[in-house]
Image 1 (cartoon, helix red, strand yellow):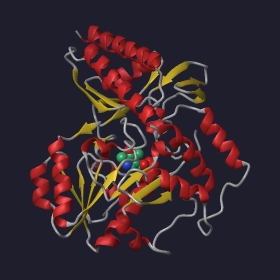
Image 2 (cartoon, protein in one colour; image 1 turned 180 degrees about the vertical axis):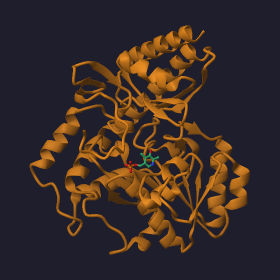
Image 3 (cartoon, helix red, strand yellow; image 1 turned 135 degrees about the vertical axis):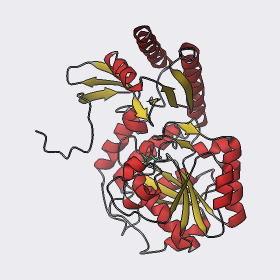
Length: 384
Ligand SMILES: *Cc1c(COP(=O)(O)O)cnc(C)c1O
């Protein structure tokens, strides 16, 4: 029996070695990793630049606490807010913590309590971020949660307009709902969100924990929809597997987060920031991001050509290298993909999510499309 709490339903696979998109299990079976540890290892496994940054920093200093100035934190904050309308960063250790920071700051700055989030959203597992989350299964058994949150249907502009008012502190939004099933709203919905925020002085918090740091072919996914967030939360891809999260915000908010108002022991330590800086040095580069956009478009088109005529495939959607295939038999198909050497992640109820590293090669994408096409056609042959 395992000495672990059984909080996860784990596969019988142990990945013990990886390089780029390729990973090997305990029997040395080779896979293409289209999970990236759930949108985390965006530069693949053991990227030489990231390994070098970790090694170098680990030989200088790891941790000092936020009682001291941390040059690596200053530099990382500057890199993150550069060319955005955001001005300041707060560093923490996870997506849930980044959202906690945003929720606390929104309440403190606005002196309002009501926060609007959306059904099927996912914002994390702490009490605050779990209360924000719009999926009942995440909250089951935990008793009364924070009462601040109102969960509206995603992509419903009318209900949003009827609910957002001058008592609303914030609207918290995933531009693309990742865990909820790779769902994207109409551009009119994002426009409505932005307009209501301006009209009632509501803070717009965009949860980019999954979609940020180049995943959609832009540094942040909100750039696709011309949104102007007051806060952005980050984690997953920010450290390529080294735990780090961040909350970015506009300068008007800085005063409400003065000394003693919020904090964390580990957040933004030199080791985490040095690793993250090496990640951004590669990803925050126009040429790199354009290539993500190109590969994402190509992957989506190829999958559409191959699958869309199968009667059990509903839709293929996503932006950049965050792609979901909504279909019947999702669990069986994912098992078949795994057997043929392609690892994927489920999302929502019927969605297979593809999250390759952003530097995946065209050849690896071709191989993945071939494996997917074969598995889907095999299931179809069996089903009829
Ligand atoms: C994964 C995720 C989180 C939670 O991040 P943790 O690091 O697991 O706390 C929050 N929001 C979104 C959109 C996520 O995908």
